[in-house]
Image (tube, one colour):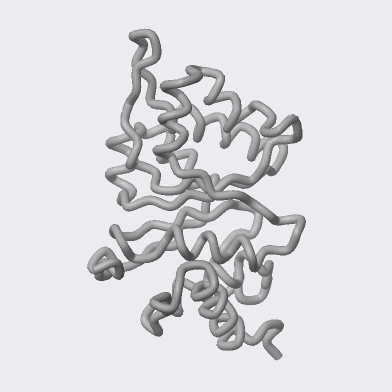
Amino acid sequence: MPQYNYPEIISWLENKGIELYGNHFKILEKDYPIIYKLVAYFLKDEVACFQYDINLNKGILLSGPIGCGKTSLMNLMKHLSPIENKFFVKPCRDISFEFIQDGYEIIHKYSKGKLYQSEPKTICFDDLGTENNLKYYGNECNVMAEILLSRYDIFTSKKIQTHITTNLSATEIETHYGNRVRSRLRELCNLIAYDRNTIDKRK
């Protein structure tokens, strides 16, 4: 007997999406396989996650082309997660702007540092790849590469998870952030990927 009624959950998510984003929001049937995996993960449905080969100890790397709905889905999953698995979504571009303002302290803030005077939090880094290498007082830094390497360290030491959304393929991630980051991401996250030919829903 299934632990959860997935069609009912999708209906609830669609209503929540309409509440958050407006009447145009719709979950397409062809996206159900992706959404079922996310629902199984965030509800900690062990049987379904085993079937989908999802490791509940790792975070989620949600990959897909521009406009397929990755950010919206992760924001919806915040409302589905049990309180002990809560996370917040932070755009990578915003982190890059914070770095320009405040420098290397921002890397500590989102990695080994303590957000809001508390323990390191589960974060979803949204739109990895939209930020650029930045200079602070003339020193160039790949901010997200440094943050992700540090997030890997707190994952191995404290089991704090990291979620990511990105338009980049695995090869493009390696090009942007290097082989070390790509290698760590394999251990840090479960890959859930849209078909690269998925249409832009914003059109």
